[in-house]
Length: 248
Length: 388
Image (cartoon, rainbow over all chains, first blue to last red; front, side, top):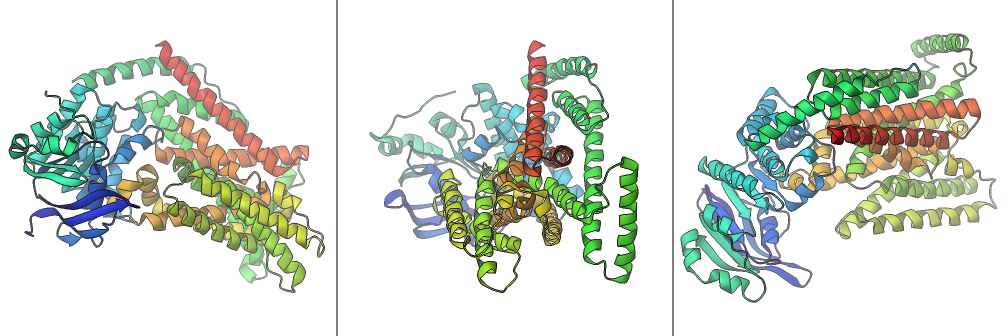
């Protein structure tokens, strides 16, 4: 593929035991894309994202990250990942916003001490997402929206080229959610590639320029306009689930 | 923006809370009162952005950590000087050290410091008070609180194997070394089981815990014919079973553990907080998990001498639980865990020596006292907040 492709999947399949989760999916995410990954509950969205990031190895097919086979990819600092899991942990552990954001520098620093450059990157990231004044708070004292900003700041501190977000706005109020998506828009405009899993299809079609709609298999992959005009949504959701469709 | 508004309101409120709280602050001379004062201060600043009180709190913690570190250096100095006392320079230094110790006894009117065996026990205790909470901070927040208990039981099986081995052969291999080897193997086994059952669920932990204890009891019962086994000291811990060898093992292992934690702090923190993101950032998560669990086994074996198999998990968990109640950041949790751990060890030693009680129980009860104080301090701050 061309050098500008960030993620390339070719005929990727993955199963948990004998339960297929992803079947024969091929897609490409190019530099600067804002890809919305949608599908009904249990459709394999998170698994597909995990495959892209190398958290699972595919049973068949090939995956490339930044032009490298995913299992050889070693520029961890290029990816900012916000999982559903990370959001849970932050509610109990005593850790400050600054500590969370500084984790973004750990892949750069390895076992050495953090340098001034690292601390500057953290300060800049906090500034960009607008949570500088919350830096010394415990993460569990933040609202859902502020917490998500902290995770984005961690990715920015890492100088990530790809943001992978798994339902980042679950439990976030509508106002903060809109602000959060405006932040994503502006980051995307600066050239950061975004892959977003979101159950609210309205949000995805409003924000993303590309849509991948899956239910184990890929039902649609292309620009948002062609998705809206297609029948992919009905086909993918079929009888298996209810379509969440709000417009803002 | 609404966030800013909320923020400024909260700072004003918390400044009021600080003022009212400061007046109730008392400072005492004893260790425990000092700890209370410290926790009060920690609580005070928890809900304020007031830089002054944060500064005071930082200073108190910093002084505490420096004191603990100095104490550790003195203890390590004793262990290594005693070890090397047959060499010229170390020999002279050791003599000077013991002279100073006798002087200390004279000053304090005690009969403790002049005895090398007391120093062995104290050194082991002080080092336990540092490394156990240090490793425990990561374990507790990885929801692996009971791993220490499991590895202690595995190490117990190791002690049993060692007993049997030394009873039936002429090889004088230290029981602790057996415990260490079997403990580390147990740690790797737990890690292996946990990876194959997909999470750190408590099922593999419960199986390892009971299974290794079962094997230990079988071996001991089989070996009872060969030798008089004093297994109780390993079960309940005992100051007097801290051997010269045991103290040396603890000293070497402690230096290694502190060094490793310092070197891998960033990675351990990242994995503790967000294991998946750490994997995506291409940290070798399996390797660091293995390192953590092996360090736990090492700490457990070292601590077993004083605390006993049954109580060893307490020092990994209780000081950390207390610190997590009052700390703001992870780094502060780590520092406070070590401080609380150290206060528990010293307090427990004083209790144990002055009232002739078992050291393990005394230390753990002191630690739980600190934990309760920390809860009281943090719930008091909650109450103060909600009245505003």
